Image (cartoon, rainbow over the protein chains, first blue to last red):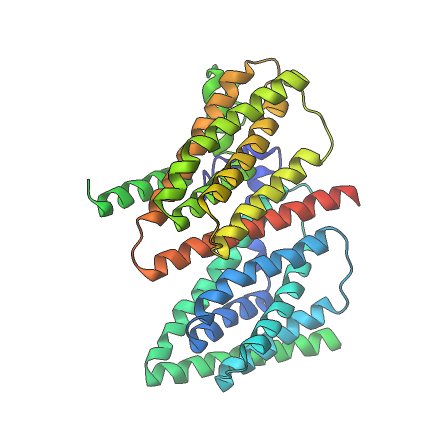
Length: 182
Length: 207
């Protein structure tokens, strides 16, 4: 995606913006768990979800991010993020196969929450374009990680490992939900 | 040259751009000719780079016939946009958010169309490529010249832009495995997502 190191042409916040964007999605365990779980669940569901999710999720999340940047309020963002890890982890644990519309709604709703949170957490003095680019690339990498792990689904023992991973994600989500409610 | 070799060369060219050494932000101060200043600007500016990549992905997903109609339309319209800006504003930045916002919208549109793999007709892709080219060329001509030669500056930018688009097109159009086409669509979604966030940035500036 271009001369990453050379993209300091974007003004004084150039390199800082790119690095900030790359690091932000991985700076919070709640975000990491949910993003990886999206990939895990997509791999479990198989085609077309395994590629529809990584195509659609970044755009929906970015829409949420744009809303956050624009100052549009979203109620219960932290609650939504915590819930996303819990629900997505539970989906992976249960090997749930809801109707397409339900899966799309669940993923889309959580994508909006995550995006909005990222949009409002932007550090001052960073380059918007580079931050956006780094943020999207980093999120996509997390999805790819989840999908790569999700390939274990092909083997019976791999399916057990995936469900265990889903349990871990769900437990993490429950913890963050408890923190958000406390 | 075999298809695999061509794909490997294109991938290496893109990797070269990714791993480029840190560049000075204002190369003109190092004595580079204006032409190269325009070219380097495209390579080092996310909006221009992503727009060119988006056009390349789109034509790649639609195949060689789409590229034939766009290969000239894209750079020529970029050049025309730059000359228009040079004539209207004498190479001065008009200010405001319209140009950055329109650039972000164009990036989003190109990425979105690639992500959903919309089967646009050849003429539609050509019109889209020309529209993107005019807009970004106009932005280059209006904001970059600072008294330098607009035709030379925008020529360099247009050449760099079409080069990036052609590289991306070749990588996608020569792909055979289904996952490669999906990867192109994922790349389109990333471009669209980046564009959406940039639109949000412009909105943030207004609020």
